[in-house]
Image (spheres, rainbow, N blue to C red):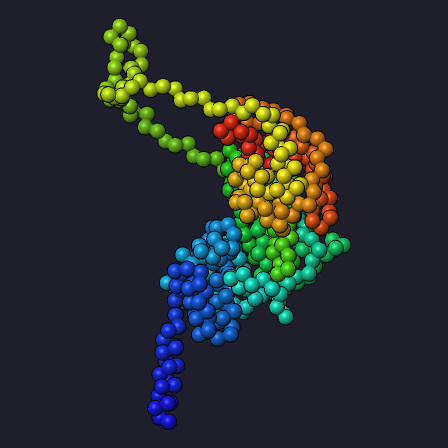
Length: 399
């Protein structure tokens, strides 16, 4: 009997010794296993705060697109760290991003799970019932000349009648994306814990002036509940051009003189700029002119819209070269991408401008989503020459 008891105690000690007290991010499986080990040694309240800390770090502490890539980036960030170090790091990230969260405060973000279990629990503060998302924008600040220096963007979850819904204690991921002429300029995230959410303060000084077209930007805000991700956009918001981010002019040394090696001076015309040749090298030739497209750029837009309408999304994606659309998985997403489209009815397509390297095409069409909702759109497609073919490089929805 004593021998049996000894073996039982020894087995328990061995099992405890095998549990990890730090993160092992060798792969996703070891990451989850080590986090589970660390969580199991904590009290119930500490477990909740630890999961909240991991969520804060995954959402705001790393830069990556998609849950899988975010998880990999999180693993690199916390690899080898123990629970106290992770909580401290989450405090720093929350403070840096202006999030009202602290590792020492009571649980406040609902039930967080960084490994993607989005099913509603019996009691889930993030399972907010809403009908849509509304956006309020207002200029803020003063640059000294009476012009604003930022835009306050406040999202509100509303019911079917447009009235704000009431909820507290949630941890809804809110994402702001900023575009100009179809090109994404920036992304920001925050936590929506109730419907008094302060929103985002978009400073003009954070937006590159060179990427803003016609002093206007478009914004899209998404709020993720347990059951659904709500999205709302505003198009053509005015910005204060004088407050936009302008890169500093690099300093140059005006006293420096560039001397070319092996410069050959024409003795009959010494004032002429000398040519430079290296021994044994041929005279440089002008680069070959890029191949010019022969087709009308509106053919590419027509092909794109027809492919989206028939849900041949691979062909539609291949007709584009637009960084703001991201990967094919993002482009074809059935909730937030072109995968949500059921039908496209084209009314008019015209080429408004073209040159050997770029073109602009205007299109008017109706889009019907898979819920049966039809929206009329007027869109300007920007196209660029890619090896002799027109590719869609930007996408702007006009008022």
